[in-house]
Image (cartoon, rainbow, N blue to C red; front, side, top):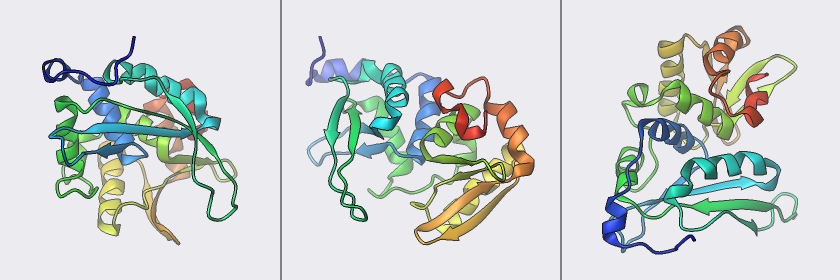
Length: 211
């Protein structure tokens, strides 16, 4: 039976294994939110996906369910400003836990999301796989991958592109669109990317690397 509230002593018993830390780095680069309430010293994570990605968010819930007080819920989000349509999403969140707070301190040192300067140390192949799951798109016609990094500054996006190149030899370019800056992983690097991630990418998201 899930419980919405747990004691302070119970919160202190939670820890975050390395594989989940790696995954969370990728997810925080993507769509996962870290929230800190004014009355809390700890933070919780919020996961959202459209219902079209139900299989993927249920996979995420399986990974993080021991940190959660309730199962995922389906909710209707506010109407889309462009179309007026109401879209449904699946949502879950974790408890506010001490083991999650170091991630907040890395990505939100002043209460606003930034890119940690040591991202090259933090980002692993597993993190890259889940980052692409959240924010990646595969373009079939020219066979390249883009990462939606519009929430970061130009300097931060350039650091992300440099990290991908320095760590794994992925040829990247930074392009501007109307909402910010996007990382392009070139067609020439697609095979490198596929070999790097094919054994660790969640199966329902393999299409995001062209597999």
